[in-house]
Structures are given as C-alpha cells and as structure tokens.
Image 1 (cartoon, one colour):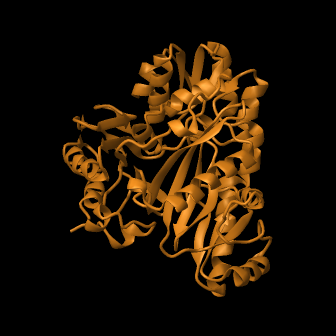
Image 2 (image 1 turned 135 degrees about the horizontal axis):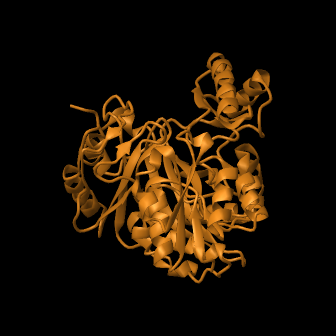
Length: 450
C-alpha cells in the first residue's frame, strides 16, 4: 500500500476520500484553487497545495500543476474522485508515466470506453443488450436521417465523447433531427473537443438503472447490485436510491439476472478494474446498456449503506495491487437508502444561488449520513458545480427511509442562499414517488410547487 495520496478533486468527494484514506493510515494531500482556499477539504488534509486560480481549466483540470503538486509533496498515488479529470485517459497515463498510482481503471480500459458509440459496439458484440441505434458515429445530416429511418422516431442524438447530458437532444421527426444534429455537433465540439455524435432510439418514459462494479488487477470482478437514478432534470440526476423498486424484495429475479450478467460482461469486455458503474435504461420489461462510467459515482453512498461495502476503501486497496476478497455471494442487500443532492439553486426556477452559508445546520438522527463540501461561514462560489452536500438516508425498508428523509430534509437549515431542499421535500411527499412509479420524466409531471 502506498503511504501518501493526492486527491485531485474538491468539495465533499475530496473530504470523503481523505477521511477514508486517513482511516487506513495514509497521509493525504489536497490540491485547491484560489476559490476554495478556505473550504474544509483543504483544512482537513495533511498537506494542501495551491494549483491555480478559480477557473477549473487553470486548476482542477491542470494536469501539469497536479503532477507537480504530487512531486513536491512526495505523493505516491492520485485519486481523481469524479468529474474533472476522473475519466481522462491522458491524465491516468500521465500519472503512470510520472510513477504515480492512479486510483481508477487502466488507461487501456478508459480508452475503450471513451467513445460511447464504439463502446456500444464492443459490448453488443459480447452479447450485452444495447439501445437500438446507429452503427457508430454518424458523419453528417444525411447519415443521421438514414440511421433514424432505420431506428424509428423519436431518436436521441448524443455526443460520442459526452456526459452529463451535454450534446444530447431528442428529435421527433426528420426536420427536427436536422436541427438538433447540428446543435449536438456544435455542443460536443465545444465541450469535448470532438464533433462526433451518434443516435439511439428514444424511449418516452424509461427508468434509469445502474450497476456498481468492483474488479481487481488479478481477474476478480463482481457486481455490487443496482441503484435507481430515474429522477432527473435535464439528464442530471437529482435523487438516487438502492435498491430499485423493480428489484426490491426479490421482484423480477430473471430481469435482475439479465441486468447483472450484462453489467459484468460489459466490464470484462472493457478490461475493467477498480470501481465503475454500468448504466442501463429499462423500458417495456427489458434492460438496455447505455454506457459505462470509468470512475466512482456521485451516488455511491446508497450502495455502501445497503451492502456494507466501503467502495473508496476498496478503490485504494485495488489500486495498490491487492486482491478483491469480497466474493459475489458475499454481496447481500440490507435495507434501503436514498440520496439527495443538495444544490445552491432556486428550487422552482433552478437558477444558481451562490453566496455565503450564513447558517448551515445539517440534520442528525438514525439513518442520516451527510457528505458535505462546506461548513457554516463558507461561500458557495459560481465557479463549479453548485452541489453543497449529499444527504443520504437509510432505513430497514424504503418506506422507513422515506419517512426519515422527510424529517431530515425538514430539519436541514441553510440560510444565506437558496437551495433545492424544497424540491426534495416535494419529491418524497409525492404519491407517485412513494409508490415507486418512477421514470426519467418524473419531474415533468410530479412534485410541482404549490
């Protein structure tokens, strides 16, 4: 095991990684921008290095500055968290070239997954069910129109190098496809430096299900059950839970077997190691692969709370070359958990709401976990994602977790900025949510403000 870990991230995930590492006896190094100098993740690390001004491109995306910080502090490993450089194969390779252990998948696996259109082809060849779509990137409008005729409208136009809903749009007919194809191409080039887009069939009301994967460098690979992430806004997840209502209490065992087999097959096809997530859509009784994320997910705590696994701890052990000692039969579900992303934003209009946290009093109680990036008196700046914290609530049953969630959200006091806590309260008090009637368009029809 390495002895000093540099965490190439910020906020709540940097704090979480740092806490796990220190609990394993490791020294930690934080890197920070000028905007984050006073945040808890900087104060709590054993060492902290300034890597640049507020703009992410000059700090958290600055590979040279991060590698220099590792060299200066004698760090032996780098954990990228999620977002920023976490799925950047060039960064992973740069770490390896600098003699650093990258806490994540091998660069070769990241390369296979980078182009999502090609990733689809790889797993489909291995027998994994994929969403019907184009045969790779479509070169132009004519190619898109021809592919759409074969797939059937409506279609989803997606950036091949994309993520987070960027470069993604729905077309209901040929005229609309011509328009959104150009929009997606432009957005893909601006966000990812590459114009390539591909098409998939658009399901009008699917559920979003994902499977947590853990694999080591000795050929051992398991799944850690599923999470449901259907409640989204503009393709961004808002509330996540484990288990999915589809599979709770032993429901749909054959579908669950298909899902987990597909997830493990996909991960093996990519040559995956470390923690990763295979994402699927569920519609009309079937599951379809959409992509694999080569990193830790924001919503990993709901898996931790319902399986008892410390995913970050395993990430570090696997990166250090240890064998995965957890067997597939050891992974068992215990209870239910919900995660709420607490954002600095207006809960109705969804405009960002940066500013100082004049009052910050998180809830406590049975089944309450908080992964927070801020403390009272800190300022949420407009420079990065507006997530303040993740509130994760567990219970023996989904109903108990929901009841505890209502109490916890009502007792979460934040003053000085607007937050989306009222939105979360509307969600957990909505009858359709409580009944488990979820799909990716839930917020378009439910949990409306009074």
